[in-house]
Amino acid sequence: MSRHPDFVPQGVIPAVLLPFHEDMSIDEPSFRAHLREVGAVQGLSAITVNAHSTEVASCTEDEQRRVMEIAGEEVGGALPIIHGVWADGSLQAARIARQAQAGGASALLVFPPGPFTLGQSAEMALAHFKTIGDATDLPLIVFQYPLATGQGYPAGTLERLFDEVPTIRAIKDWTPLVPQHERQIRALQGRKRPVNVLSTNSAWLLSSLVLGCNGLLSGSGSVIADLQARLYRAVRANDLAEARRLNDRIYPMARVFYADPFIDMHNRMKEALVLLGKLPRAVVRPPLVKITDAEIALIKDALMEAELLGTRTAKGRQAA
Image (cartoon, rainbow, N blue to C red; front, side):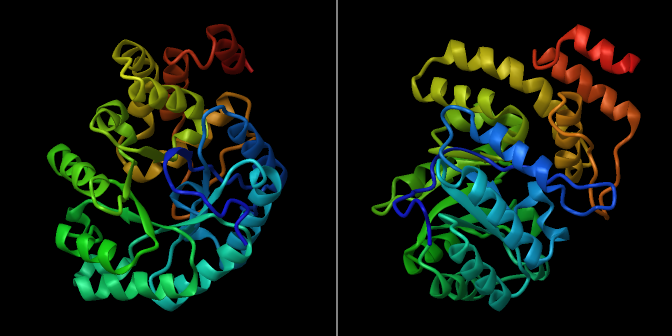
């Protein structure tokens, strides 16, 4: 049962990382420390687990259950926990949803089924969400992928989802086209039953937030949650000067985290936490592989440019 039954997905929501041992088993002590460190940031609305950032595609359902259990123990009393629903089949998605609710999740982030890359219809999307909605009464967050991937939902499909699945309360919007992103913000948050738009355009977060998103859900919050929370507050307060100052610190991290290949974003975030002394190692599960020393050096430079890592500390680590 949710510990935060009145939670509405909005505000600043980091998606945390999942540390592994060298044998690729879950490093529970490091995960607990990471959760406590992120969860202590002022101004957060929730924390997300079992999503891209925790390499959910490489985790079994039992591992996802354990991730949720640990998150509940470490931060669940203070913050709502959003649980990702990653499944190619709707029956499996419903099973994960029930498991998440039983574990204390306060909302579900629903990923699009992989087969949608081959084509989809509004009826397919509705069947997926209705199957999940019938399994749980938790608020649902639609993960809107870019339309070019085949997994994004056209505007007409979104309208039907919002009309016919009343537990949908937010959308994690990965729309890369600014005009489309703005149209969705205006249309969805202006509905009679508003649907909050949570930006996941962390590579250009300031621009996205200025358009009026009611929140953000970001894997880079695993490293820079404080900067993101302060940026969100500045934008909401219409303090553009402070927002631009904070964005100048965020930009170096966005530049290295979201470089090509894009899939390595959370791989790079783990390396950043190692450089900051907050993780003991940056192990990822295949098909991801460790990034190069040259790229790690770029991440170190970005941490210094963002004033997150001092020059003396960086030199000391390099010498070591």
